[in-house]
Length: 302
Image (tube, rainbow, N blue to C red):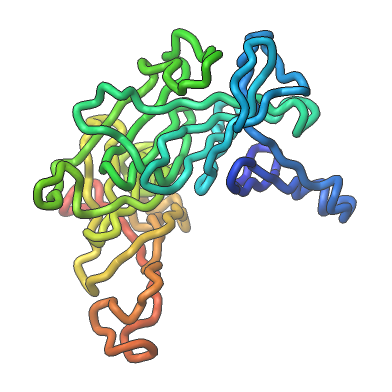
């Protein structure tokens, strides 16, 4: 994930790292071209991060800032303010993390985190991917509970969280959830979303910044129409076994309308021999496949 300054970011447990590509190309100095941020909350409320913060395994001291642990399986750059957002992975993960690098990282890195309100009819848990649109809204898919959420920080009455609860901004959340098949005796879907993606350049024709997630057990992408806020399903009917882990828009010829652009993905399962047509590991029909989605503006469009 790149930002506007040509830095590429990568997540890890408890930190976000980056490489300044321009600095590396200019100097080839590995130390000067990289950086990282921990997650330190401004729990003392002075508007800045001060060294001497308390650690995750220690009680919060109201006179100090506080570092927390977090997962960053997926990282996004918010194009509106260049902030970094992280989503963890795993059944118990609920945190949506926001980071600002400041002027002298890692010492000036400032964090906020938000968790879904506990009052939801069906609990949201088991986060996966994260992406941000050009309005600053951050989208997150929830693997375990089947939700797709939009978090708008501009709606927050406050982001102050002196007790590190993650509940400073319940008004920032909006949740979407399909009426998909569920496990017997459970409210949770039998399919599972993987990562969140954004149609930044409107290659599908649904509108700029259409958010989506890949659905592992239904051979499909689920896209939110930015206008109607309804799901649009992009399914790969054959061969069965489409497992999307990525999505990238490409415009080859903007003069030819829908024909000159498309959304690209791939069959990304580990067990490619389970793709329809496979006859065991290494057999015919089991090679990974690229997939291109194109949408006509109407069924008869040429």
